[in-house]
Length: 553
Image (cartoon, rainbow, N blue to C red; front, side):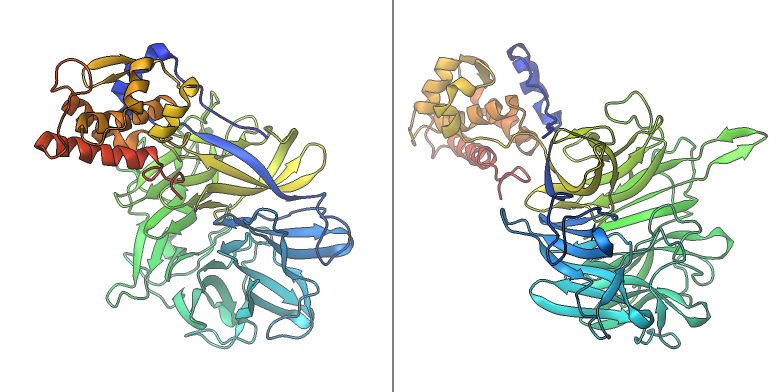
């Protein structure tokens, strides 16, 4: 297991640490575990898995993946987050086709999309059968659409659910019971569709006017797609890539509950590029979009240009909007974490809820997953890293491979230098979770510092322990001091102090109004005593993990 940690600051820097606490970033860490690998026996099959050819998905710790075996075995599987729980078969070549004839005969090589334990996928059967389906361990298989499904607001039946590029299939996407997908019909029909409560609706098709543009959409798949042109769904809201005549393109959002403007442009070729190297520069293309509730992220930029034999690199970056407008996550002017080099290219991006994870490439074969989780930019994993004592040579990841539920986790299919393969889960941490004042009172040998400043006075470790052991409930200054000591020890131990930075400042200000050292014998019913108890309550919540994401679950 490989663990990335941040070294604790030395005691001599305590004063500086406390002074800078409001602006400090959380420590970042990552640990790895294996869901399944090529030593795992195939349930309902023969032997062990031989390959995991597509990007897996994760949702609240549950992992969905495609697995291959010898003799043409192929299936979709679910590994639940329950410790020790065996993985489950979601669909394989022994599964009867819902609404069809016989068993499934093949599965489209798409990214997988998972919502809780519901998996959506594209599958085929004998006699040209093809469809979009949902599997759930506790529910019957569900047909979203197949070749017997009439195209909503179209002509005839669906004829396909994949764009022409066999290596860049668009995946159907699920959230709750709602599913969004790309569908095709005769005479060049193509559109984005959604199934709500088992009823199909048109999100956008070739009869749909481009919001903020001219004419109708002409396609929903870019020419020579670099990453799969998946639509995305969150609740009943769908976001997708759309294209029109004259180079029009953008990212569009469909909100079925809006009677006035159900379809709007989130970003298009009129949108200014954040932190652009050229003032007034706008996007020319978009290659990936993801969404979680109102938060949206995408990859886009301007094309590379060859002029008079000179290569001029275009702008390219990862951008997100979490409620305050588009902002840059990373672009070609961003240093790759841990490398003396800049990003040169980006793959897919995920967001949940406001944190972004993206696939990035750099010079000399650099290829990795990176995130702005915990502030700043951090590496999650790169080709060439050691995981469990094996060297990672390549990996497959998608926008559905990041979930910030009870834990922040990233899942990817891994290839190793010894020829083995597996489904790897990276768990992200934003620094150690805070500890309570009782923990620090009972574990003085684990203190990261030997003194602290409370208010305007500096206290030795012995003095601080005496305050922690003072169990009074009538002196507001001691009530506050106990929680303030614990909070400052947590921050010195590299817990993220951002949630209580202003409270710590206020607490020190209150204590600084008194001369000498604690205790100050402040009545809890006095005005300043009430203020001290209020700050102590907030700090107590922080020290017990309530205010730190992924610590209070």
